[in-house]
Amino acid sequence: MTRQLRPAPGSDRSGATRLAGHAGGSATAASRVLAVLDAFGPAHASLTLSEISRRSGLSLTTTHRLVGELRAWGALERGADGRYGIGLRLLELGALAPQGLQLREVAVPYVDDLHQATRANVVLGVRDGSDVVYVEALRARGAVRLMSRIGGRWPLHATGTGQVLLAFADPQVQEEVLSGPLKAFTPYTITDPAALRRTLAEVRRTGVAAAENHLTADAPALAVAVPVRGAGDEVVASLGVTVAAGATQAQALVPVLNATARGISRALGAPSAQPAVRRRP
Amino acid sequence: MTRQLRPAPGSDRSGATRLAGHAGGSATAASRVLAVLDAFGPAHASLTLSEISRRSGLSLTTTHRLVGELRAWGALERGADGRYGIGLRLLELGALAPQGLQLREVAVPYVDDLHQATRANVVLGVRDGSDVVYVEALRARGAVRLMSRIGGRWPLHATGTGQVLLAFADPQVQEEVLSGPLKAFTPYTITDPAALRRTLAEVRRTGVAAAENHLTADAPALAVAVPVRGAGDEVVASLGVTVAAGATQAQALVPVLNATARGISRALGAPSAQPAVRRRP
Image 1 (cartoon, helix red, strand yellow):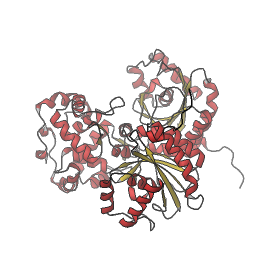
Image 2: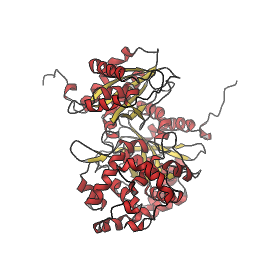
Image 3: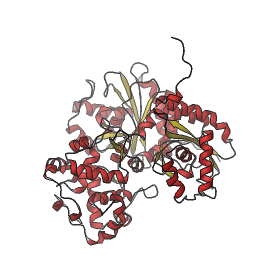
Image 4: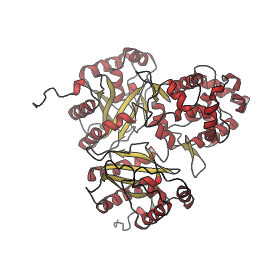
């Protein structure tokens, strides 16, 4: 059956080398398919065939063939301008992620309440490795510039929601992040491991993360986040709001955030979020 | 490079045959990757390795290898129970679909307003071939059973949002749907091509689709939908609400639906949704 594949031309070699990490060994046919998908990103949502070829490190011939297959399946779409974008089939599949949009399904009425009560940007994030990925993001009209959207991904150390997830993650995950490079997005991003370690201890002590301008410096923003717990009382998500810095004190947002996070945790079956006092029958 | 692939065992043949349609010809390595992803669906969000193998028609050996690669890349995740699910990397990628969550970004404040005003289930759908795919879905607490969620996919003829998209689609798309099988979901689903043709003409005339119990019969539901227009005044999406049948007359929902759809259309730059009268400077 491998014979039915066109032989990959030699010009794929550089791409194959670069891609070796994906497959955990030598480049495979699967890794080439994934390299085509990897060419797309928030800043590269619409690409020409040659841009996909360049960004994936695959030859034009191979790119053309793979793009054709991915398009037939629905992973890619071709716009009226001839450029390629991600297809709705991937949105459909991505929506099945158990800790993704399924969590959103449970959380959305509560997140909506929080959005109404605060008129702020609201995000719900889950941990994926050393990143936070947003599974819900409601944008306030006229609010601070939004760095968050469904599917948005940021390093854990750089956002309030991420810091909550990191503070309650396994020590092994924390040590991995603390020992790795801590990228600076603004002069306020925590990049010193010792400072991050102190911040995480404080988040665990208070149950709240407050990050000012860690992600953007141009529009002063304050992100406040609290944990959401699952059926085993483990932290499964992080609920955060972002407001213009100065407009609201972080402390003022904590009660409504905690009340909302508790509602979501209860809906997820978290024991600690069940009512302490039960009505008599 | 193809030599680096393990030869596909003969037991893959049935899968390969079944998958030929994906690749538009003989089964390829890419089609096998996509077959693994195809194994997952709303009713199959969590699968064991052997379930993936069976559903994809691939041998256990091939499935094991591909699942490993897809997991390393983030397309699949392994839960605490050892079962595999869709990974957050696919949610992240799927969120880049130009007519998907990017449209949602623009629409969400308006959709939220509609949700608040009606307290109903609200969906925003776009056409993908002969289906409608929901890019936003807000569920009313205590509302009728929800058949809609982000990433949800239904045939155009069976839902109000789908009928709007079909009514304003190219005649070629309409003829394809009208000539194909029209699946019945309930006794009320329109399955007669002539009846569907009349319905589509009515939707074009009135600008509204009203579908009663076309998708579910157990919880009587009324779906009302109107078009959303883009920068070229073409219909790019469909905005719909679902309420318990009898609770509200369809006609009563039309003004608020139209006002909301016009807001989204204006935000998308639709000429017909720009203000007719401008204030003096």
